[in-house]
Image 1: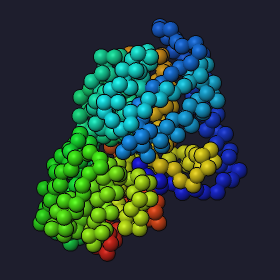
Image 2: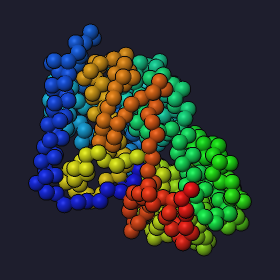
Image 3: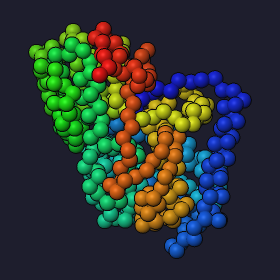
Image 4: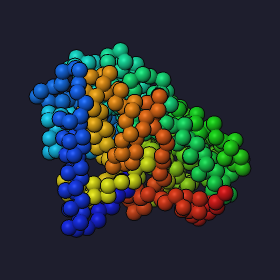
Length: 405
């Protein structure tokens, strides 16, 4: 979830590609399915097709919620410019859960009351787990573009376009274990579903990748805010770690890093996907430079999408949630176009779809999960930049080299 696509100059070719993208969307929604596609047995909306979205526009994950919102709005404009879904305009109905699981449940009830059969969300794993049990009961298809907890795989009617924590935790252990001369590692993780799930997957791989590390200290912290981080940093100082891994939300991570800087600590910093927020460099400053973050794969298969985003929103960088939000809307629009505007029809389409979005292919297994694909990013000059895979095991982490296996 990182700001890692720099602005590049627009040319006549990028403009042409933009036109071709809209044309491709037009072909997808107007020709491929309507009116020559499948005949639907259930009535289809005449005035508008509505997809619900439960996003955190306030609270600890607001930075991500805003990014998903921007990408989803871009997708909606593209789809409607191409003729809508079966000729009917698309609209996203947004519900702000303020990063609070109880608010997520209230939003899910509102989605049911509105008769909307599909929802994009939630974002935080705690929030998604709070509403996942209602998906099948309410006949609402749930598609999360962000929640990584392995527990979501247990719920029918729940899909996600991001990989499970099982793979991210193993990747973190492998990368940290590949750094030379690391004797002490501290892992700070949240006492919630997100933190516990990711920490468990990390622990599972310790004996495989961290066998040469003499001391691994785990620090569990509450996800309540504000929080006292003094004791966390004091524990870190006692261990004098070579590496610190933060499996926390940006607000906790920022406070911990600020306190660590004041205490004179200088470990190699790693962060889980939630830490790859623009809040970290903005609020921590140069002390956060060279921090390594783990993210879902986010390389754009359509590079001109970033240029369009820069122009539409008058910015010079694009973050992870924007492209994943865009893909989630196009994916569901395709399924509604094919299977109809019902719980059963959308689920059937998701179960059989082979979708290629701007972030790559999406194929769901029997649990509604996708194949894992992760990137590493690094903070350089205050922005998150992708670290190439051939550099990961040879990167000079604060002067401590890493060597290939």
